[in-house]
Structures are given as C-alpha cells and as structure tokens.
Length: 314
Ligand SMILES: Nc1ncnc2c1ncn2[C@@H]1O[C@H](COP(=O)(O)OP(=O)(O)O)[C@@H](O)[C@H]1O
Ligand SMILES: O=P(O)(O)OC[C@H]1O[C@](O)(COP(=O)(O)O)[C@@H](O)[C@@H]1O
Image (cartoon, rainbow, N blue to C red; front, side, top):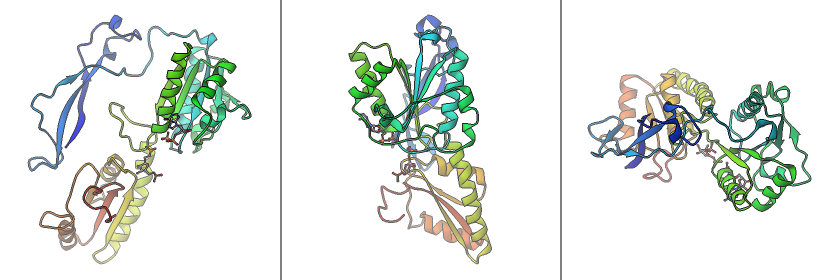
C-alpha cells in the first residue's frame, strides 16, 4: 500500500491577499490524498480504499508570473548552477531561466561552472545572456558542466556574498536540493536577502504535484527506439520474446508511458505494482499464453520492478 496524492484541483482558496506572492485566485490549489491499494482484485491499477479522502492544506504554489515581485530587477545578480548527474533538458532549463530573467529586466546573470565546485575561487564564472544561451537547448549535457562534491556550505555563501549574488537557481537531484536547503538556512542565519530557487532534476518524473519533470519526455521518446527494435526481433523469431529494461529504480513512469506510447508492449512491469513470476496468475503463465496465441511477446521492465519479491531476478 502506498500513500499518494490522488487528485489535484483548484480549491476555494479565494483571495489574492491570502497568497503571499500576490497570485490571482486560480493559483490556490489543494490536493486530495488517498491511500491507494494497487493490484486490488476489483481494479486493474488503483483503488481508493481510504473512505475519508481528506483534503490536504495548500503547501505549494503553482509556478508562474506574479502581480508583485520582491526584488528590483536592476538590483538582481542571478547565478545558475547544475549539480549531480546529467539529465536531458538541463540546457533548455538554463536557457529559459536566462531568457525569463532578461524579460524581467535582470542584466547580471552568471553561470557557476561544474556544480557547487564552481563556487571555489579559482574557477571562472561565465556571464550568461540570451545571446549566449540562444541555441543551447539543441545540445545535450549542461552548458555549465556538472560535478559532485565542492566547498562547504559556509564557503559557498561566502563566495556569493563576495560576488553580490542575491538569487541562486539550483538544478539538481536530492543531494543538490539538500545542499540548496543548507545554503538557504545559512543565508537566513546571516540575514541575507538571497533567494534560493530549486529546480528538481529527475528523469523519473516521480515528484508529487509537479506536472512533469524535465527530461522525462526525452527518456520516454528515446525508449521508443529500443521497444521497436525489441518488437521487430521478437516478432520475426519463432516464439520470440523481447525484453526492454528501462530506468526507474523506484518508479515506473518511464516504463509505463513508453509502453503505452509504443503500442508494442504486451507486459509492463513497474516497481509500484507487485507481481508473481510463477503460479496461475504469474507473469510466466501469461507469457506462455501470449506465445501460444500471438506467437511472440514484448516485455517492458522498469529497473526496480519486483525488487520486493525478487532480489536476484532482474
Ligand atoms: N546534505 C547535503 N548538504 C550540502 N550539500 C550536499 C548535501 N548532499 C549533497 N550535497 C551536494 O550536492 C551536490 C550533488 O549531490 P549528488 O547527491 O551527487 O547529486 P543529486 O543532486 O543528483 O542527488 C554535490 O555537490 C554534493 O556535495
Ligand atoms: O545506477 P544509478 O547511477 O544510481 O542510476 C540509476 C537510477 O537513477 C535514476 O535514473 C533516477 O535518477 P534521477 O532521479 O537523478 O534522474 C533511476 O531511474 C535509476 O534507477
């Protein structure tokens, strides 16, 4: 059983004065949380078994323009840093941050090279502008470079103070955001007027309330080629079986979306749904049935599928 946010809807949150960012009425959102029991006998996927299905207090704001902004654009010196591993779309995000800042009238924007390491004195920072980032979304990787490790949080904040940086955009995963949170806390301790903005980077698209994390679509699209190859192989062979393993240690969104989009997958296994390999309702029995009826089968497996039951199977 898993706790999931099941439904999101505009709430009755009604006044823009209630929104500290001055957002219009429709920025008030609340979520309905339910206990979802996967693989129930009455449902192919999910069934709500929580009779109360309570509404959760609003704790996030939908991103977007606001009526009032805190910083005067001419006083902003913004920095962008990309940490951790690579993910498709990093350059696209960098590009849009730069272009949006410029639209707001911000003129001083710098790129921090090679993750938090770039806050060390010896690494040169790159000045960013629309001209610099114009075509970066057409290339993979990160224009700024990435790395793991780096100076202490206190040194990072020292470095930002010395350079007059008062807005930091951090692109990365769990570790990067733990770092961003530590930087934010250090800034509060020093009473600095410095905004830290985290942009979650996960190819898995498994962050609650986010419409979609960047890189996810690219992963699903790239998976189509592998699925199609597996399909052709399996379909051409006598009783052929194709198996495609996709990313997703703890979530099966890539595998599920890629399977649905392809129309070529017979069985999709994801970590969220427990299954048996053997037995009358097992995967192997269904595979045998597919070979007997269709002549071939293609299976899509998310990396973490079955990890609870089968530690050595995949
Ligand atoms: N708890 C933490 N406090 C401060 N910085 C952290 C923390 N955890 C990770 N970091 C820093 O965040 C960066 C990226 O973290 P990492 O775990 O490698 O990647 P990811 O962000 O993809 O999870 C590294 O530079 C690391 O030093
Ligand atoms: O083997 P590694 O390097 O730990 O990474 C594999 C795992 O990382 C993920 O890609 C998730 O990483 P991100 O959330 O950082 O994109 C999982 O889907 C995958 O299972």
